[in-house]
Image 1 (cartoon, one colour):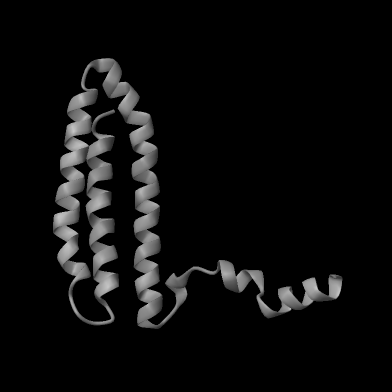
Image 2 (cartoon, rainbow, N blue to C red):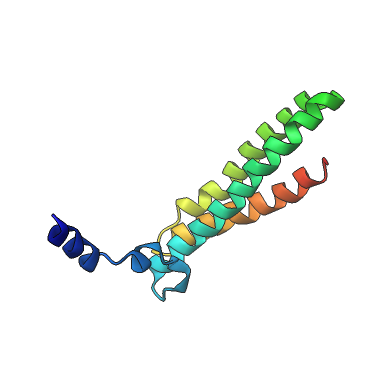
Amino acid sequence: MRVFACLIIALFPLPAIAQSSCSGQTQLDANFCAKEKWEIADRELNRLWKEIKPVADARGDGQTLLNEQRAWLKSRDATCEPESKSDGSAAPMFYWACMEEQTLTRNRALDAWR
């Protein structure tokens, strides 16, 4: 059993699996890198939402904030969706870069609700 485990570890070294695709040089790496950057911004958005929504609720602004968030989601999708439909191997990179940019802008707006 140990021999099998060692063989698996040798075939799939953990540092290679955990390595960010932002260090790559191919278009596929750039596509994955752009998605990774958006995921970081999206995690921050979710963290901010969990922090700010209860505060807005307590101030009586919770529904306004929720309506604003829903409108932003529709706007974000409408803005970035055309990028996903373009041709070429770089289309995913442009889509995820758009999603990241939109999310970072929203993060700043949510931060202003504090």
